Amino acid sequence: TNYGLRFGSRGDLTSELGTTNGSVYINIGETYDRAPFEELDGYHKYQIKEMEVFQVSDEVRVPTRQKSRSPDASEEGEERNASPVEISDAIDSKWTAMKDLDAEIISLENSFTDEEKFITLFVGGSTSDVVTLNVSGTVMATKRQTLLVISESMLAQQFDDTKWTEQGCKNMRVSEWTSEEVAKWVKKISNIQEDVSNLFQENDINGAELLALNEFGLEKIGVKRAGTICLLLKEIKQLEKASQDVVTLIEHSPYCFGKILDFLRMKQVSSLEVCGDPALPSVCEHKRDMFEKVVKYYFPGDSSS
Image 1 (tube, rainbow, N blue to C red):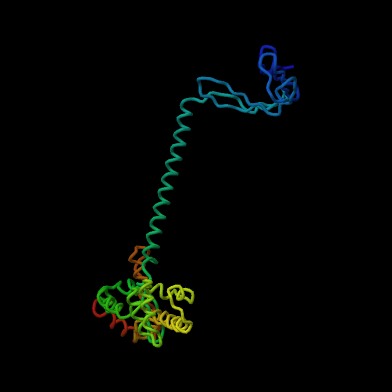
Image 2: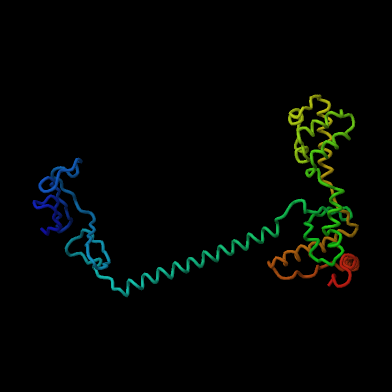
C-alpha cells in the first residue's frame, strides 16, 4: 500500500493510493475537533476520483493535475518551473493581444460615429423642411436642402431662405398656429356662436391641439351643444386635410423634372463624402430635347455643367 498525504498526528485524514483506485480515510477527533456535520464526524472512507496537489513556494510554478491511476499508467504531465523568459514572453503576448483588441474597439467606435453622423445628415432634420411638389399633376416630395445643392440654379433661388419664408407665411401649417390664430379661425366658422371661440382662447388651444381634438376634448373645454360639436369636428377635419395639401406647382414634364431631382439627391449624398460625384442622368432619346430645355431653364449658364 502506498500512503499519500496524512493530516493529524494519529491520522485524522489519510490518503492511500492502491493498485487500482485511491482512498481517503477520515477519523476526525484524534487531533482535530469533530465537525458538526456527518461527513467529518467519526470514521469514514471515500474513494478518490480526482486529486489536485498544490505546493506553496517562492518560485513561480506551473501546476499540473494528477488523477488517480494505476501505477503502470503513463505520466500525463510533469510539474516544472516557468523560467523568467517564459513568464515575460507570456505577459508580452497578453499585452499585445489587449492592445490589438483596444485598437479594434476604437476603430469600431469611430465607424459607428461616422455612420451615425451620415444617418443624421442624410435623413435628419425637421419635417417642416420637406417640400411637396405638384409637377404637372404628379406629386413629388423632397427636402428643401436637396433643391439648394447647386446654389446658382433657379431652383436654389426659388427655395432659398428669403423666398421660402415668404411662401411659408402664406401657407403656414395649422400645427404651427398660436391660440390667438385658432380663436380667429373658430370665429370665422358659419353658424358657430361667438362665445365658442373664447373657450378655445381661454383653454390656450394651439394649432397642434386643435387638430387632435375629438368630441370628448371639445366637451372638456366647455362646448356643450351637440350641433356645435358636430360642426367643429367637421371643420377641423377639413382644415387638417387642407393643411396637408400645401404644395408648390412645377409646370414642367414630370419625367424630366424627376430625372433632375434624382440627380440632385445623389449630389446631396456625394456632398456627405459617402460616394463620388453622380453620373449625369440617362434620358431616353425622344425626350432628350425636352430634358435639355428644362435643364437650361433651371440651370442657366455655368450652373448646368
